[in-house]
Picture 1: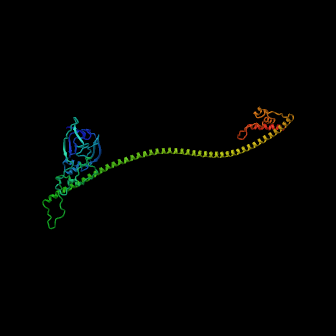
Picture 2: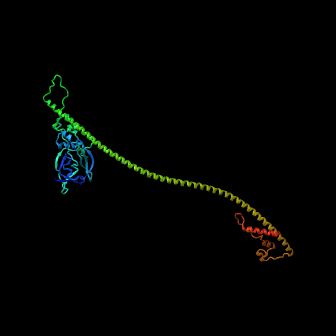
Picture 3: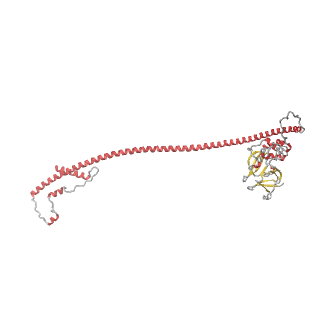
Amino acid sequence: MAIAAIKCAKCGVKLGTVDNLWIQLGDKYLAQVSDVNDHPDLETRSRAMRMGEADTILKGWYVMVTKVPLKHMLINAVITNSKLQDIACSSCSALLGTRCVKSPTNHVLYDGQYIFLVKSVTIKSTVDGRRRVEPKIQHSLSWTVDTTTADADEPGSPSTSDQSSPASDQSSPIRDLSSPSRDPSSTVRDQSPPGNQSPPPRDPSPPPADQPSEPSSHQKPQTEASAPETADDTQLEFVLDSEVASAFRSVLSYFERELDKVHGDIRAVRRVGEKQRKKQDGAVQDELSKTKAELDELKEGNLRLREELVKTRQIAREAGETAKELASELSLLKGDIGQLRTDLDRRNVFQFAGRTHMKRSSLLRDGDDDSASNPPKRVAITPEFASSGGSQHSSPTASAIKRNGLLSRPARRSSGIFGETKVEDEEAKKDEEATEAKDN
């Protein structure tokens, strides 16, 4: 048996090698014939898993392969319990087809079987890996059982338009469980083989009274044959009900498992969120405590500054009051000093006037004595004397006045804080001493 290489039609990545023997399903799908244990698994990526339904490709495929009556097919085949999983390319994630994960016993599918989309894969030679190889078809099957011919003469049979083809689904070759399933009774009628056609329904109205109710020769065999058919229909309906119930149970268990997973994820997210919240709360509390400590320090510093400002204002107020008091005292001292200066000037004037009077009287007495003993001499006025502005020798009175210092320039007084200087004190003392000496 020839071995072919399977490659992805989109990216060209080699998925693996399988036997070049296939089952063609319609025009779009190829199913692997060889067992998966003969060759290693293909390098594919698994996608969502779903359960096979009774009205999908699996049911029609099983009917075409086994060639058994419908009732045996429904009893032996457990289509709804086969688990299918979409497969994709491991490189570009393009949809390649479907893989049977688990199939029931006596089923046409086996575990690990691949069903490829013809347009998604390319079959090439393993010698050079470039030459395209045509797939060897072992069987060619259609998607569903063609019941147009079988139900053409049956009155009230559903048309072929009621049978929905799964090939219209471009995303997956198997229809999702969320799609509504058809009526099991209609499925039984649609897929019943031509040899087991149920007879047309009889008129249930009784015959007229004037006519004899003798059965005809052709009605008796038909009535006898309808009894087994009725039993078979009842058994088929029971089997269908059990299949539907098992399908619902499997779907319910699947949903329960998924719900448990969701609950577990929610609990995990809650735990992580709680940890994160606690961590953030701790960080926020630390930052808040640091901020509070800084605010307390700033408040304390502000209080200290306010106290210092109050003290500074008090000191400034006291300094202003002290300055005012000192200014008033200074003004009083200035007034006292001015009064003292006035009194001192008056005293100096009186003392100077008294000394001058006493000196004049003593000089007059001396002059009278001299004039009496020595008469004045006449002095001729010479040009030299006239040019010099007077006699070279001054009069005795003038010389006495000059000698006593009456015509001398008084000493300059420098005003100080108290209006007196050291020189004035010394002169006043000397004048007092001279006056006391003369009086004595």
